[in-house]
Length: 116
Length: 107
Image 1 (cartoon, rainbow over the protein chains, first blue to last red):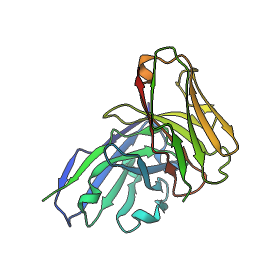
Image 2: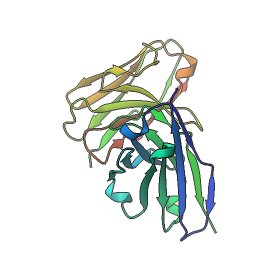
Image 3: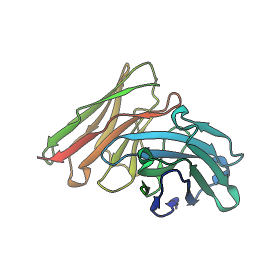
Image 4: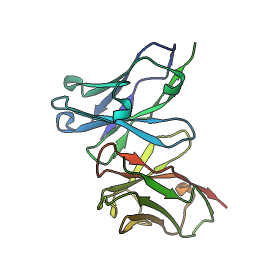
């Protein structure tokens, strides 16, 4: 069955970077888009961008273009998101989710806390 | 960016009741709408896609409809497991955007 498993919670310092992972199984990663989304607790959801598993082609929300970098490792069916120059505004729950337009399988989410 | 104006923000309902949540798109997005449910501290569950199609494994008491640029999620005969937060999402153009969410609580 389809599984989408994200890495664990992160506590990081302002100005630093963090790399989140999203390991998948149960489907053909190379013909699938993987998305990353942000949710500040108690608020709605923002789409950060997506990446195609086959060739690493990306689409970004302009709001996150200088903040997030999406990559994939097709051999391990894993998607990654690098978040750079972290500030308190980046503290949030980050999800990865499968799908090109609609998101049918979601990871469990990873909490990133930016604090000194 | 396309705005999805979702209402109501919160809703109290009883078991077996029928409830409807709506999203108004800021422009024509065809049937490019999905609905999701989120339980506290949990990830999102995919409910409806293409405005009206039920995702695999979703109970038939859930249904989606469209009238112009207004989209609705209807839950017939509310069950205990239906309480949570519901979000609409447009997939017509990037950036994909979500409504603010509707918190459905037990009355």
